[in-house]
Image (cartoon, rainbow, N blue to C red; front, side, top):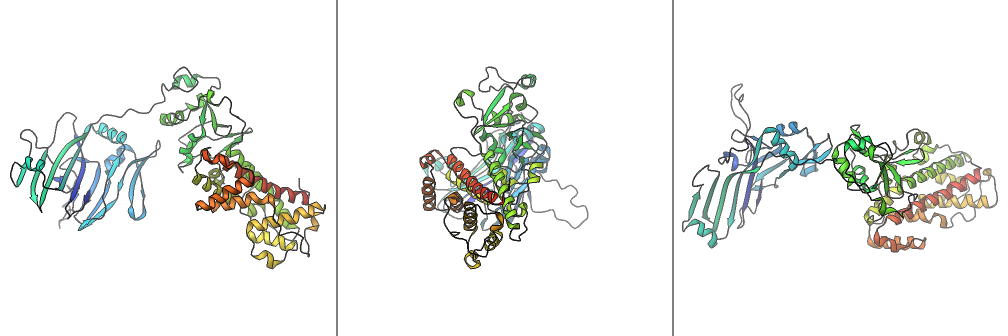
Length: 550
């Protein structure tokens, strides 16, 4: 249902429905009465006697429909027909706040956005908003195939045109003409008349649009994989007894990482990292092992284990020929391993800060200080910490600047959890003036703590020397070791081009070749994560040395 300039010189209106018409070879059908209104049911049944609507059965002149459209000239509502979504097993979700749309998904596969369209509109002098519904060609044809029916567009179209010779020729000198097919079924009605200084063209029609012919289904049978001279089938894959590895670019994971419907939590087994997407217990990839920075190795037999064929075809689109990475470093650290190193150093830092607090009468656990529980990590890996999985999502070398900045923000959120109040209490216990400490942010507090501890370590002091009533010397000094943390904070808030330029200058000052960002920010992300880990490692090591921690 669409219109533009309803009362102007370029007025245009379209009302369109799709009817489900039984039969394949029955030919054209006549124009249906609903064409002009553009709704399946107009207004509501009336009557004052019980049961007066017993025979109420919404239809398009007796035919079923794809979209259930209702209206009363003021208000209109739309939905996918009950028969359609129940036949295909679709699940609805509503999105869009004030501009609400209904989206139908096939959660069995899953396949998202199978059908979607506006929920409602209203009419007061003009249409509040245009309404359009779209549906996957594959699913629409399957529904029609199951019903043994055709999809017929039933529509009304009108347009205000300029008075042009071509249209006048059709009118044959008359001021108003109305035409139907000269013989056969009256599948259209055309009306042209003079109107407000131009020509008004109106057309009512029923046009066969979609036939009940199934779309070819995606299949993993007969797929040729790089490095394999013979096409692969399920039977052949199931008979394999060797490893027969397939190599995929880790972009294969992005489809799954970016949807909450899938589980893509990395797991560490036998010294190796695995990233095997699964779908709600219905199916799963297995033994997808990280190799190098951006590769995944999976045995062919595992790849063909039960799952929708479309998922295997998806994996095939990211397959890499072994010859293409013959000179690649398959031991290069990937983003998941980096995040695990970050987690390890955070747990170490938490141990140190907790033990250091005890020397000045503070009592905080590692979980309270860092948000991570070592026992939970040992027992269940990252399952309880989705922030780690988000930080460890695919980090391509050609990463865009916006992706890089977003990942830097996530990185900052992971490591900066130690309460400022706790750090202030530590510094005050070490002799730093309360007034001087009060307004410092977390980074400068951590930097000050490192300065105090490093000075104690330089003089080979024992842990009991940390608590002091004398202001430590040089506790406000700038520490070069902390520069990566300050850089990460700057990147977290980099929302202007000028700020990004300053951050790139800082990257260069810290030793990163900024010429690399011309090909993407993947290496820059590696540099920032490594820098943050090294900085936190410096703090954790200094505390451990002072407290004689293992």
